[in-house]
Length: 227
Image 1 (cartoon, helix red, strand yellow):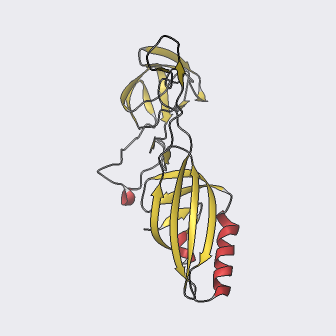
Image 2 (image 1 turned 135 degrees about the vertical axis):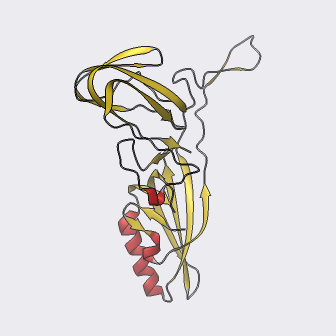
Image 3 (image 1 turned 60 degrees about the horizontal axis):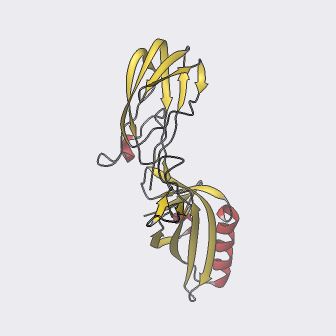
């Protein structure tokens, strides 16, 4: 498996992936102890309606055959100069999702022939889909078992759209050719011409129907996310 960080593939540096530690983001718990009440009152989901998480820490361990100390100094320095300390998208193998992470690079010389590189990712809790619902799909990398086709472009109004939500609760962006009305989860909202968002529309996991009234066309830009 190769790893791409930003525009750089680690294999191009001669790095060989030895192991991965993918951390789990800690949930932001909020509990209150009330006198006279057994246990604690759990308010973790009281504000957002779903759990919120801290960043996750992931570690990728590589080795590379350099042969000399001079080569190790050159390669590790080049790698640090390109990715260390930067916030970059990180793709593991052929995954259709990426981690949005702050990258740290540590390197050590194991022996005369080999060196080790440990790349640590301070990553947002959810990894994000590389494609949005407005992007063209690349069938060569499409996984028919796990990937979902989301084609939400140029929906005729009046009309309906079934939005398939991913694990991460998130909003979407509307792009309308004229002012229209969208009904979602039993509530109606006005969508102006052009690009806009509706803060009250939050797409949760599963299938959800958007009904549009008016005339023209509307596109819905949505990017999924999962652990």
